[in-house]
Length: 73
Image (cartoon, rainbow, N blue to C red; front, side):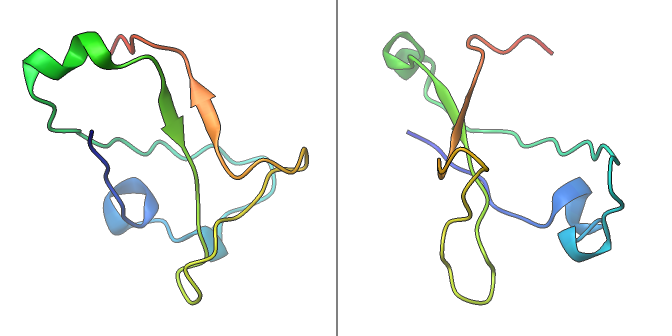
């Protein structure tokens, strides 16, 4: 229904500069039609290699993670 892509932290914190154990806040606004909200059952996030477009996987072999829904700011 919606997606947002970009370098983390408003294009200010590329992943190649992250420090081990560091937390990066990365906010994205998703433009959803209010009538579509009742169809949303999960919010999935994933990362990909910008050079190849390949999805990155977690240590569990997943290429995405589900976040709690609804998201409360």
